Length: 570
Image (spheres, rainbow, N blue to C red):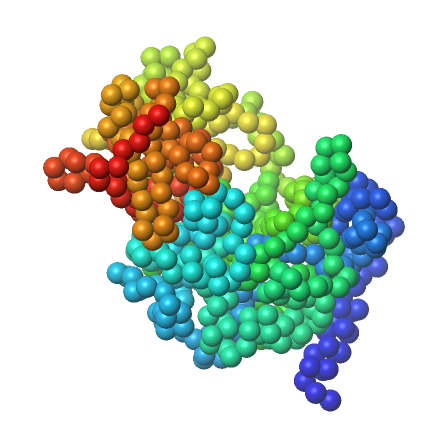
């Protein structure tokens, strides 16, 4: 009997043993959570609940294909989106264990088409999300305005075009949603194993775990069977079919059924041999060279690209995927050994459903309420005079500006140029909590130093966003005109021109609508653009304007040089 057949038989046995009988009341209650999906006329999804290494619940709801009326079952495949990254990381761990790669190796050993950077980028930097490389989705948007990276070759070309890093690898973390590291890890798997990434994952991960319907789709034109088609509801038009046109691998394009996903997550309770033990290592926190971990608003990031944080006081891991009409969410309650997941094909976030399915099992175990009880907090009574010492504009280096002001004897905050504001409740002489009807804790801590007032913003247990108070500049039309001109980036052959229109500095590019930039500090401007948060104009030693550096999530130190003698006018 060959090894593959043994794996299949053992996995099938484990899957059957791990399926548990559940009370009909539990099943009915869980069915009610997904009742909006339970229809034969519109898209829906599939869901699963695991506890103590056993499957409590596994069902499909709704329609997989509106043209054929094929219904969703636990065997229907869904695109996992960003959750595909966990298989990429596991593939790297497998190759490391086999001695075919090492974390301290320069990635250029396997990817010679990449430029020689000032600082070496290693496989370990990719694994720990600290490479200093731009997010390819962000840079693609800068260049093309819309659409997505279509092929692995296009993704690699974008990465290879970057000549300088955002930061020295290992000293900072990449944009939390960056896909670049995972794309490169998938390519390293291909070049070091002698197999395509899809073949390696199939033979080394999916087949040993009995995930026999799972697949890495590395060709967007390939046909899949028993797959849920993605849809989006359009007003007055019903559901419109969407298409996943990207063939990029490593960060997206893993397809799994609910049944297969249950087999995968059973390894967190009952690991199957060495492979199962490696799966559990996906929970290892990413970290910098100095050991510092990445704690974002969503929690602490792990090398499997999932996040851990306390949910009303209970430690959990959360992972998600959103891609082309597909939505996936997974919640793992660690101490209770409960896992809940939801897969959807209706282009909707389904985290509330996956989370809601767990609540009946843990509702009496939460140490904290669903909403913060501000009445139970010790509120510090501060004078208006004291509150006014915190007023001002604050700048965050990632390209955001915030305003702190007093209104009706209360300290408040709002994003610069944004609408609405939030109330800040004083907990001490210099620490405030944002008032919100939710469990999330948002703290504002003010510290006076030699360089002025600094604001430290934390979201739950996140690393602080450090914001410096500044005096906003007021620029005349003549002042703004000094920034007008054409600016060109050689790496990506992209040009932005700046004009002054109706008293505002406006950036223009053929692939984008006009972007209005407002002055923040000397030579620093901000906008409301989602891909171009801010910019800093650059000058030489003679104070002559030479270009600008883009400041936005996922991209730093991308310089556009001013084209001499080329001016723009309205």
